Image 1 (cartoon, rainbow, N blue to C red):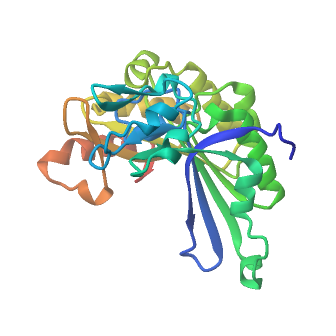
Image 2 (tube, rainbow, N blue to C red):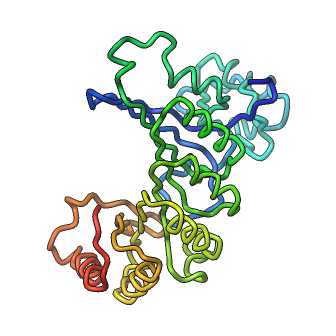
Length: 300
């Protein structure tokens, strides 16, 4: 790779080796153009590396402020104050802090650095026999499409089984390229109605439905995920209209994730084991049964 190879901002790389015959990696990309009201991952919203101060151990020496080459961190009434829009991500404040009171959320990576992490230089005989699987998630992975597509190309050349999670909110050409490198696609659809989708996520769903149609037409291995959000899209009429849209597109099975409203602007995902026959969750059970009657099988 040349020095001009693209860089990406990711949150982290996770490794799962619980299965004896495979290694499963997960890369979480930062950056998402949607503003979903139920989002539980605010750290993935911005593409930028974000600096989070720990006020409990900060001694207010202001070394970070003095060393900052921009105005990304300033002294405000003898308290450090992060100005994210001015931060250039140089990490000088993190490096100079004597207390370790500044934590970066995210990091810059190259394709070479990721492959060096994912592919051991001298794998053992057991490692040579293991299958390589990788899940690319976000945020919205296609918000960093140039890097993503170049990475996927390299991963396929190294025989990875690729799993991509997306909202489908991307340029159609980029989305088609994504499909060509993807073995299993997880596609999240927030709402069947464009205006309601805008109210839930800050974007309309026209391009999302167009990309979903492309995926269903060209890609056989696809899972459609529906976030059911309490008091937002959990009416029985919503279930019927979701089913109508998806069955017309040829879908017969979906994955469900339920988000319960827990505050003015706070939603928490419920585990399948939490959804019982109690009165509190009777509505979601009726919703699910409605989907089934309309021709959609489901899983959690």
